[in-house]
Image (cartoon, rainbow, N blue to C red):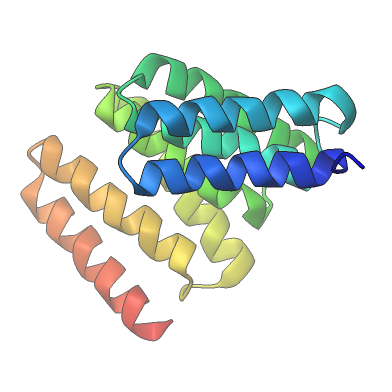
Length: 168
């Protein structure tokens, strides 16, 4: 008997993750796109697995050097997650950080900062000061500040991130 759709989606997504770990970014993109296509055939767009697959696809596209496509896919993942959970839900922290990193790599520092500050704010509201999402946002804000030549800000964000990691 054929596998149920959800199992096919998860299998393809996992194969994409394995290919990425092995350094085969093209294979990771291929399997993750297959996961998305399989899910779109029968799962709701807001199914939790579909939200994860969209975010995974943005990440593997980014790893494959396809920054513009990654950002477009990252936006779609963020919008779908926000539509499902609302604008201040902790489920947004990961997609916001991923999109912020992609935007930073694409040279959109203002857009990246907006995403990362929003991720840090939502993480604090949802989880308090000591959460990994907050620390991840702070780490990336430190990198962004460093790229912009704001050494003191970079140091402050990095110290806050280290303190947050130490508390979790």
